[in-house]
Image (cartoon, rainbow over all chains, first blue to last red; front, side):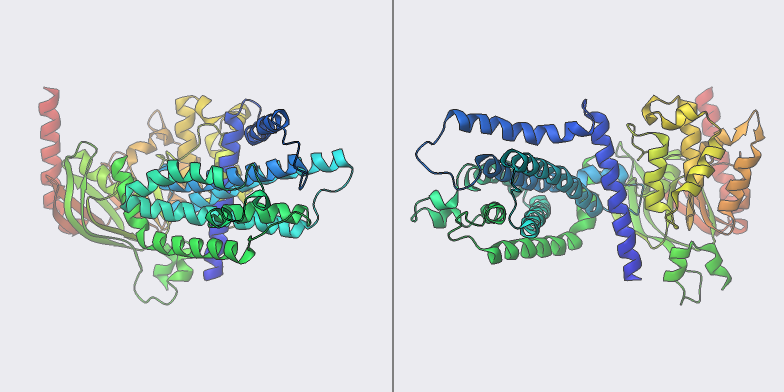
Length: 265
Length: 254
């Protein structure tokens, strides 16, 4: 019985993800390529900035393209999944008459699509760098994939928690949408490596789970990349505790969220 | 057990140990308001068991529509709870969750993955193509670009392509099934097949003969439930409400 339900839920999530992707492709003027343009454009823009404002003195810890791309892509993966989760119940209202589809399915399907888009982006960047260097740019592919998945799970957990808590306390939703997103942008190691941060400032940044995810991802590409203070355990705890907590509170509040959202509509 | 024949395979597995026909939907002290804040109905409690056929007779259209939408999940009650324990259809021919950007074929694939029992989408695709009888160019075109009659036929065919435990029926949506007053045979056959032994809630009049086959009735007057039970026991109240409706219609026309 439980496997039957799980199989059905997987089938529904797959259908929703396919539909979401197909709709985005239709909306984009460049089709499927258009989905990859936005994140890759961001990376290219900051790469150009970095080339212009070159830090000549410091020896590079890894390929600058990979360093910047991994930071940006993982950050945008987090941002899109978490922010989409916050508005997920409102988006699921369009399926309200399809009773088999629950708001959680819509949230997970959205996360799956983002995961696919940003996954393809990072693979493209890695392939481009590998071809340029004529050497495969990933030392531990399995570890890189695991970090990517852990960041996605953490994002979903934080987004879902913010959705439920933000429903009770709207200030939390506002804070995640604006303040926390900006704070994370500057403290997640998008432009810097944790090794270049002075010792006294490091503990202030290490609370951020996204920084751990990004630095561990870079470390899995280049094993010599230094990661002082970075812990896989910390990221694992964040991923599973946030996801477990969010599913627990979401399960207890689903009816309330749906009813209030429908009343707002 | 005969009652279990009135269920889709998935619901049948869940209720295999039951001795009475299982409850498909139960409304518990539900109060509903329409979009303008008018009361549709108040404090309504009732249950629908497998195989039962209910007709809703109300003096106000918003009461009947509200009840259908409430069970479908399109409207949330102001008070009370709607507990769904089975596979409930959307109001037949009224599905609004289709993607305007995707083609008919893609929309069918989506609904079939959500509601299909076998996972084999081709069967549903063939059935819908056969029922719709429209040209291939419509099949691959984005849904929003289709003419309205084609959209209506497609929505209706989509509703009839899947098996549900409980069908929500607004007979006015069945209009495309009749051409110049004559029922289309293919549509009628599939409709008969779908509704056979299944539970139904119908909100329309007798124009399409659906209400004639309803064994149970819910009769509303001014948002209050007047009576519920076997149709033969409610005939007096039904007549009263229908007379009131006819009187109002005449007054409005004059």
